[in-house]
Length: 222
Image 1 (cartoon, rainbow, N blue to C red):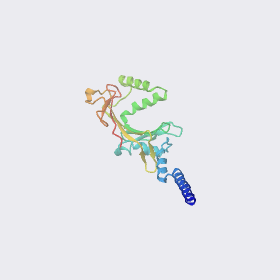
Image 2: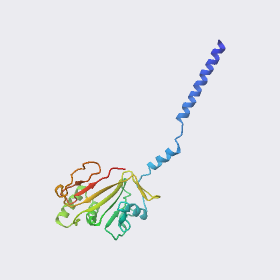
Image 3: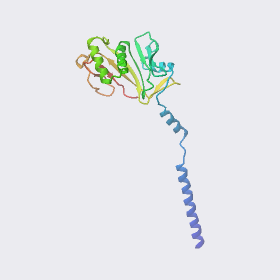
Image 4: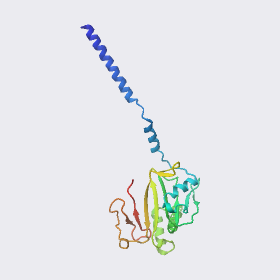
């Protein structure tokens, strides 16, 4: 009887030791390399310092494909100054991502919008607030001192809060398109558009009756 109790106790102790080893192994299990790799890709987003050529390549992606080659491109020098990276020969103007701002955003717009956009950049450089820039351009557009599109002009935006330019594939990752069709002083009555989207992705009129009245089109993500 004593021998039986002795072996039973030994068996119980060995079982506990084996169970403890399994728990330790589970807690110290190393994640597969694939998981680590995907995490590294997900955080590859900080503001990028792109070369002039890379800025041009990424900025052109905001424009319709058939007009990219001959579009004008603005970007930034090594000190963050706004400069012309490439002269254009068609009606499109592109702007590279600002490396000093969070996220990623490149835009392309019809050249008839350039006076309005350029005036906004000048006012911003002077330290004017968003409201001041908006009101100043509104006044100048109404008195004729600021040139505006005579009909309509489209602005294309490729943006993403965690977007970045993949240099190897020359593609923008984690970004989506949005389209803004400027129709100065347009109203709901003159366009027949709703003043808010009827459903995701539907066009609607923003700032009706203003100089910067425009149709917003935001395609659903993915």
